[in-house]
Length: 176
Image (cartoon, rainbow, N blue to C red; front, side, top):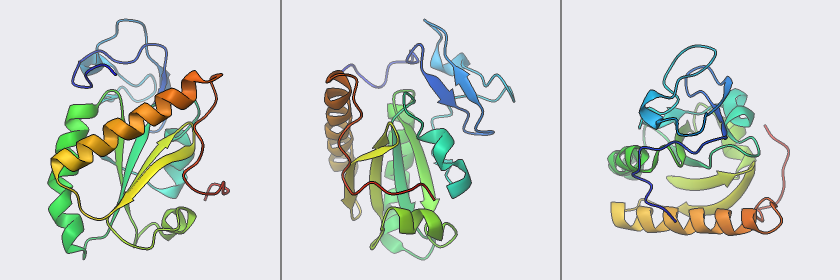
C-alpha cells in the first residue's frame, strides 16, 4: 500500500462531489488539491468528513469509486464527541485515497437501520457499495489508523481477485 498522505489523486476513478454528489472522472496525474467537480466547481477533496444522508448514499458508494469510511454518531454521545477530532484528522491524512463521512444516527434513521447500528460510535468501511469492515466504540488515532489500513488491504485484495467486490461484512441489504 502506498502512503495515503501523497497528494496524487487516484487517476481514472469517478468521484462523487462532496458538495453536490455529481460524478467527476479524474484525469491522469491530476493533483488532489486541484481536482474540481465538473458540475459545481467545488473541490473534490477537502480533507474533511462530509455529511452523508440516505439520499446521498448511492452516489458515494458506487462501484469503482473511492472507499468510504462512515462514522455513525449522535450529538448526545460523549465517546462520539471525543473521537470526532481523530476522525477529522485521519480524513485529512487519508484523502484522496479514502472518503470520510459522518452519519447522524438521530437524523438519518434509515441509514442507521440499514447498517443495523446498535451502538455508537460505529465505523463502517464501504468499497464498491459493500461493507468491508466495521468496528464499534471510540478509538484512539493509532488504533483507527491500523483499522483503516487493514480495511484498505482487504478491499484491495478482494478487488485484485477477478476485479470482484469485497465480501460483505454483513448481509446484503437493499439501499435505504
